[in-house]
Length: 404
View 1 (cartoon, rainbow, N blue to C red):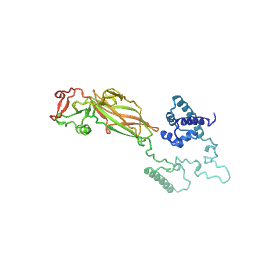
View 2 (cartoon, helix red, strand yellow):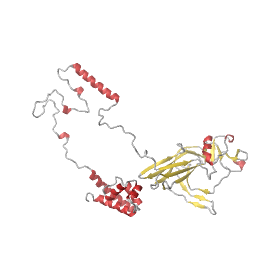
View 3 (cartoon, one colour):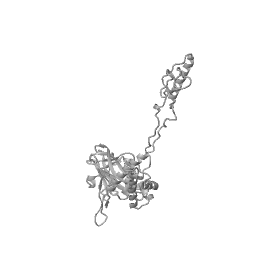
View 4 (cartoon, rainbow, N blue to C red):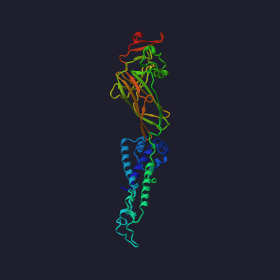
């Protein structure tokens, strides 16, 4: 195959994809995170991409099937080989340094050529090793004053010590500069914004907290909007279930961020807390149960499982279908992920990891509760209390008629 035939074949496939899609170079380039001129060079064969990933994204955008993508990858592989061969410099005939005529390192044999023979007692500069100082081993010429030699040796030692103490390299021009913090993907801002809500109540009114206090030392239940402050004041822990809402929004109206998966990581398991359980409602139910991801923290490896929601606000109960990953978000199309993490037999500390990709970048976002793990503990067998608003005090379930 001729030298550039592989490149031309690959460029023809890219041109066919671009023509099929119909969008301009600029529009496609924005989706691929490359400039319009770069994409034009791919189509003309002037440039071969260094990675197949950008070409594969183009194929997906243009609706290529699996067979076409495989053929495109094979063509790119051949074109990339041709590019590398063309970029490799041709070997030049440069005589090796060791093959060049050199002066004889043996000082007893005089140098060939006209002129007087060199002084055999003088040091041969051609045999000097710059990496290993020879001055201390060189014999002084006869008749040289001993004090002068001693002074020179002392001066060399002082200079060497000074260089070592000051930490300066002996060849500052060729020594590499200390590497600064290399700009990497972690230094670039995320292509999306995100926020969480970790003090949510079911239906806006139903929730249980575990608190290590007697009923007399616990304040009345707050409104849902003030639940975070109430929980922080009492050192409360989610009892039985924790609801976490994650809101993700892209920064660009056109370049979507793909959310691939949500993982649950349990960092600590202990026995359920031996605290009192305080319910924030005395019977509460909502007409709409939103779709969510259910997490069973009691399992050895909890998974975030998509669950359908229910809408009972109308004459008939309507199912709200769950949506599995992947999701796509832009600045005009955000997404809310609701996680319901339940625990019955453990005091579990946990966090979430959200996998994403955008514009050739990939990453994993760790989601915590303000830098700390979320915490959920089982309530089975714990004394449970509800608040009697008429009497202004906490009473047990048996007194209120509620079951545990």
